Amino acid sequence: MVPNIRRLNHAVLYVTDAQRSATFYREVLGFETVQESSDGRAVFLRAGGSDNHHDLGLFGVGAVRRSQGAGLYHLAWQVDTIDELVEIRGRLLEAGALKGESDHGVSKSVYAQDPDGIEFEVMWMVPESSWGSYATDAVVAPLHLAAEQSRWSGVATRS
Image 1 (cartoon, rainbow, N blue to C red):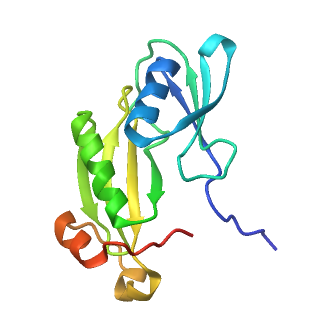
Image 2: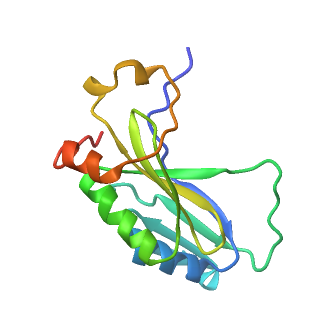
């Protein structure tokens, strides 16, 4: 029998400048640095609401040409409430990093890029009792964040 994977423990990204990227993740998403090595070319960060040792590793590799081939598309960070998603959306907009937003039925998502153009998602999960047909239907619809916040404000779905 294959053991069940429970969650993503951490992600590691190759970036052009680990310090610049760490500053972005700290200032915009509230991560904190837990460890640095290799003269600051490797930075390990923990998300503000995480009890994990680190959720993100950044390895500085200098200037590189980004490939459109196989590889990571994006990471998804989950927040506890829709209110937090609204706050993070504002921070991403202010940082010039917001690239899109979608309603996936079971989740509400905003998309952004870090200083190296690596895309990431910040999402809030709808309570499972309200998934309905979205539990098995793949949905990508426009996100009406103000309406969603009005409906779900204060509802926590952290798992």
